Amino acid sequence: MKDKLKVVHYINQFFGQIGGEEKANIPPSYKDEPVGAGMAFNNALGDSAEIVRTIICGDTYFNENLEEAKAEIKKYLIEVKPDLVIAGPAFNAGRYGMACGAVAEVANGELGIPVISGIYPENPGYDMYHQYAYFVETTNSAAGMREALPAMVKLIKMYIEKDGDLGRPEEAGYLPRGIRNNIFVEERGSLRAVKMLVAKINGDDFVTEYPMPVFDRVDPVPPLKDLANAKIALVTSGGIVPTGNPDHIESSSASKYGKYSISGVKDLTALDYETAHGGYDPVYANNDPDCVLPIDVLRDMESEGKIGKLYDYYYSTVGNGTSVANAKSYAQEIAAELVSDGVQAVILTST
Image (tube, rainbow, N blue to C red):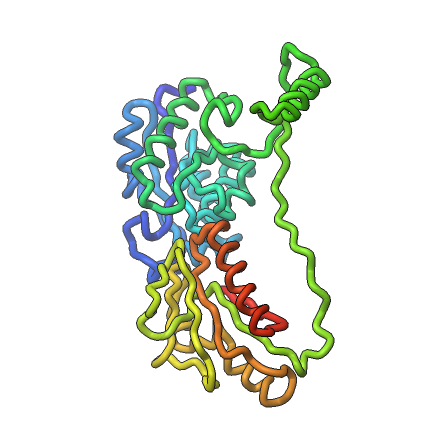
């Protein structure tokens, strides 16, 4: 392996120091120098590697123009011919994680360039693209940058020292990639299986050699037989709240949800409602909150007798970066209230 690796770094518009959500629609561009966190990577890597190009793209543009963005970034990578690509870290930012994963798919899957990134395990980018990159586990927000960068640098240096052979994830410190390799061990499989079974029976610690995915299965309820007499509720993760966000629901990684009365409300106006969500362009939602929470349409259906009654309250939170554990907790609390109030169906909206 070369003494000094040539590295390309991918980041979004925010970490590329271009702007926040108002710049999320910018197409791919590049600078032939490290930018933002790339400067910290460069300093930490010293003489072992150097970021020679930083590719920057808006999160919204990337996810709404996936093939175009991937094609442009592929062109940038072919021009540089890097030895390694660094993506992110993306933490639990969903669109950013998806973009980092797609970059890894282009770099590793199409061009054979190894990729090292950082991500929160619940980020959908990890679930979809884990086979294309060595993902270091991070916290769920950029507040964990101080821990994420050293962890990624450590893995990059290990990659260099071991000539690209990082070995098993539990030994090197990256998240599982879903790739299984044959290895030689001292004990045959049947003996190892019996030992694990005995350990499990005895309540002792053991580590499975074949971890299974956790499937969150929910049995569907029977369809409504009489929609015209049903009480329907609205729940949204799109962050629609009364103006001023009275419950101070966070724009990302929400720690709460709100319950708001819509008794007598026939239309959500920009004067009275807004979105608290920080993960998408809020302009259209703020101009007409019914785009996310369609109360106007449901009132029409109510008056036309297509549904029995629209529930007098709606529930709202922000899905952006919110943990699965919190989301399940909110759902259990909300569902219990709706059942006790005789609600027969829920329309769940998002972004």
